[in-house]
Amino acid sequence: MSFMAVAYVPAFLEDRAMFVKERSNGLYGPTAFLVSNFLIGLPFLFLISILFSLVSYWLINMQPTATAFFTWIMWLFLDLIAAESLVVLIASIFPNFVVALALIAFANGLWMSVGGFLVSMPVLNVFWKNVFHYIDYQAYVFQGMMVNEFQNREYACGWAGDACQCMYSSELEAECKIAGTAVLSNYGYATGRQGEWAGILVGIIVVYRLLSWGVTWYRRS
Image 1 (cartoon, helix red, strand yellow):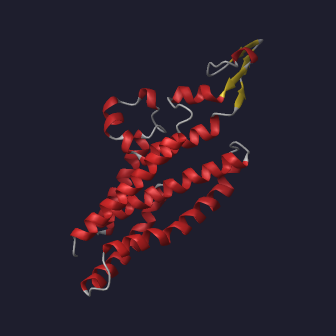
Image 2 (cartoon, helix red, strand yellow):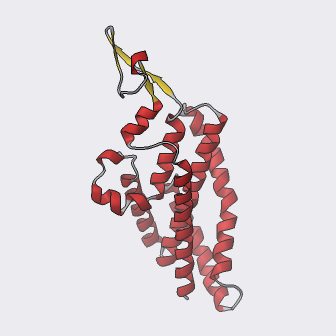
Image 3 (cartoon, one colour):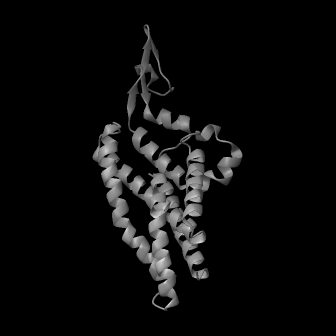
């Protein structure tokens, strides 16, 4: 879903080209342009989050509760806002379709690599972790979704003959079960920090938008 944000590049570049002309005519400035651009996009991003989740969430067999489902939608919605904000920033700096597309794809590939999905946090290289992980919006979304899915679940262990074998060690091992928190611990995630992660994610979105405003204000063409 983050990668799909690149589809917004041509539409934004068209809007930006129109803005450059109308700004030259003194009709409005970068603040009006970017605020309206942000607000108009929110309903569509929310609709995409709902439609995608209605199909994928239940097919994947994730936690079947209303609370978990709408929490998932919240994380996905914030993810799409951040992804679109990144598109606006890069396309504002490089208002060329091919260049913007390549850089956005590269950035999202980098975020996916250091976000904890492809390489878990306990084994992620210190350099990549300290330099890129903490500014990766995908990392906070993935962490939030992981906690949302695993913190309140239990799983049955496998059997080898008469012996119970659990993939992850937890306080339920004597019952031949795995506590979902053991999965989170294996990935290096703690519970109870979802509000902090959501706040950081909102902060990243605000920084992207403010930088976009700065670039748009500075550039006249």
